[in-house]
Image 1 (tube, rainbow, N blue to C red):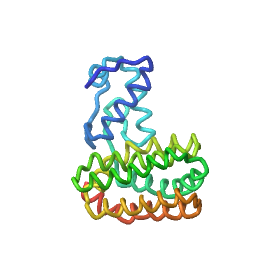
Image 2 (image 1 turned 90 degrees about the vertical axis):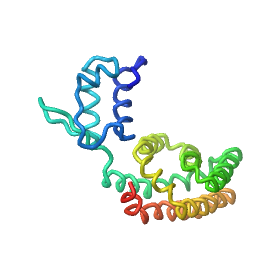
Image 3 (image 1 turned 60 degrees about the horizontal axis):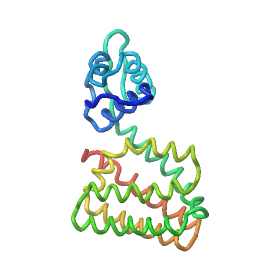
Image 4 (image 1 turned 45 degrees about the vertical axis):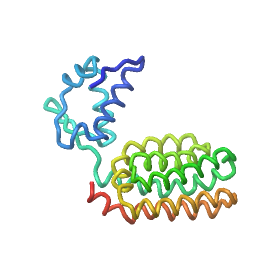
Length: 217
């Protein structure tokens, strides 16, 4: 593991261990040692202990006092709950982003649709994911809802594994391209209610295929 080199030791330790759990470097049911984590990250045991307690509140680990800490990791319940939250929040956020989205941001959205099409032809899943993430990020950040933006950004790391499996399926990438283009066209028309309806339809589609994708994972 790369040693922590930052002024904010506590936050950096928390984010690094969280990252290692979410990218499945640390596997579900794996036991974590405070001492080994502290040595690997080049810090004392105190920030590691604090990080593990925060991760337990997030549901990513389970601490057995005076025994060990066990990785829980990403569960189907995690993913389903996050997808439900997105379905409730993002359509409203997208609708309200219409009045703030700039012409430059609209061009960026169009670029992301075109990039998705380009990388779909090559089935470059990593690049498809990047274009998909950027498309949604442009909309969310344009809304100016700082707390909601922070909340949705926090979910991103959780859904990377889910999204990779989703974007590995050609039929779902095709569906994404069509729906993203429809959303983009609604933004171009500055049609707030159409943007909301199409975003809701798009996210409902993700829920529709949730079990299939989770089984693939």
